Image 1: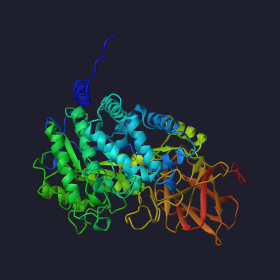
Image 2: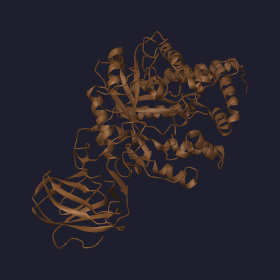
Image 3: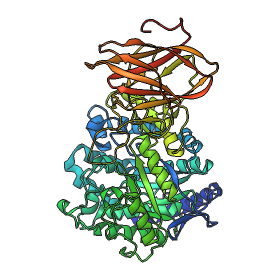
Image 4: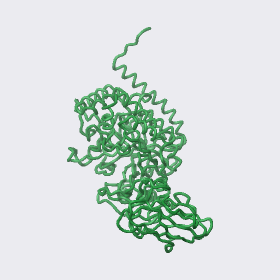
Amino acid sequence: MSKLLVSGANTRQILRVLFFLSCGWHLLISNAAAQALSMLRADGPTIVDASNRPVVLRGINVGGWLLQESYILETDSLNSQWRIQQAMLRSMPEAAVEDFYRQYRANYVTKADIDFIAKQGFNCVRLPFHYDLFLTAEQRRARTKALQNPKDVDGYVQALSTWYDQNQLFTDPKALDGFRIIDDVLTWCAANKLYVILDLHAAPGGQGADRNISDCLVPLDLWKRRDAKGRLIYQDLTVRLWEKLSALYKADARVAMYDFINEPNGMTTANGLTGNNSELNVLYSRLIDAVRKQGDQHLLMLEGNGYGNEYTNLTPDKLQSKDKRNLVYNAHRYWCPNDPQTGDPNPLQINLIHNLVAFRDQWKVPVWVGETGENSNEWFSAAVQELNARNIGWCHWTLKRVAGPTSLLRVPAYGSILTAEGRTALLRNSLFSNCTINKDVITALMQPTATQPFTTHALPGTIQAADYDLGRNGTAYFDEYAARTDFTKHTPHNQGRAYRNDGVDIEAVTDAASNGFAVGHTTAGEWLNYTVTIPKAGTFAVQARVVNTTKAPAKLSLKLDSKEAVTTITAVPGDAWQTVSGGTVTLPAGKHTLQLYVEQPGAVISWLRFATPGTASQGGQ
């Protein structure tokens, strides 16, 4: 058998040819799969499809999947993905850690999750990913060595520099996890007519000072780290990665837009940068030019400093790139007011709705809320109602969280990711089939003005206190503190953080006959509404299951259809659950609204029971 000897230069040339051949084949496949979707573009301040019809993208982020954020996994003390890996490597060989992450990526989001998103009425998915998924096993091993020992960061940077010069980065779309996963997501989403936003969530080197978001080994290295040749090598890598992505997806209508860099932050003079976004301008202009050079006309989303919101020197007139077509400007909205009249004095800080609209109108560019969430249902409903009214798209953060009330899906608690049992449980629990659907969150997002029963209540029968109606604060319930609108104030909107995501404080309990939850932390004047059906008019004996650990009696009243109280219930102080009588009430047949009103606070309320007189429980069941 003869041997073919090739030089290093020839090898690189062959690899380059193979890469672009694979790109061409990839484009043929993706074009066929994307026929149901239309390439999007910007028409002034509006996103339109190929038929010039406006498209408002409303979707879900699949965060915590291709980049683990510690709070999503309830591993806050570990702070970031690399610190989670660092801790795991103390008791596991590297191969076992890599195997766990392969299983994690295979389990955490699957086609079932994407199908579920589509069934709720969303039309897009934002896909946050880590750049290390586009590294080979050898290249990722070099990064693993650096995260184990900070002294090895310089060696990792030099290795990246060498691979960059030899064109050995991001070159094999069939072998690298990142490309394969993107292709899977595009296939799943296209089957559901969902667009995909490609989001470089953890950029090479780290785009900010927040390790949890960017998984940076050294904060802000994207902007500051130079290799032995004096190059800002991480920026070169970022451009190279987007060149490769663009080569694959430039004609793929399933991709709505490219989100170049997620949430730059900490770019201040105190951190050794200019403080005027000039570094962002330079890199964004390079990225725009690199993508457009390939003939790629996708929408390109820019994110400002300050977690994606501040655009000094980043407006279209300031960008160094001459190509200003199809740009989209981003806002990330967390813990801020939803009043459209409230504005920020800096017109280039656009997370407030007033500034967002003004920016769009002034610069005639589309704006999009790439992330929003992590608040109460009341805040969600208010936000999407105002954004929808102004035809501004948004993307909820996030699909699923461990024990998370604010996501669409709640992953059951699993223990510790640092134990074999915990990791096994996490892989099992994160599967779609094992998650709990937070239907209250979905209703708040997709039906923000709706009021409807949370579940069926028929009398006679037992009403679980936590099963009050779905809807806005002041309509389905009233709670004095139902949404967090000041990011500097960390008081939680819900002190129980169990079961539902309203301002109503629901806590987990073990009380008999409960559904495992009870309403507590009440204030005088707060109330809960329950839609009830009474098949036949009659007289009912009323009971409540409560505990009152305060020093004064608590008093509750029940009202029917917003009229005067039909009965009152008093809970005396005590450390044990008690079943207390509310006397008897005569109620008419039909569908009604029963209101539980707090006259005097102190009671934790498990359930209410309406029974035919003589059959009500006399004890604490």
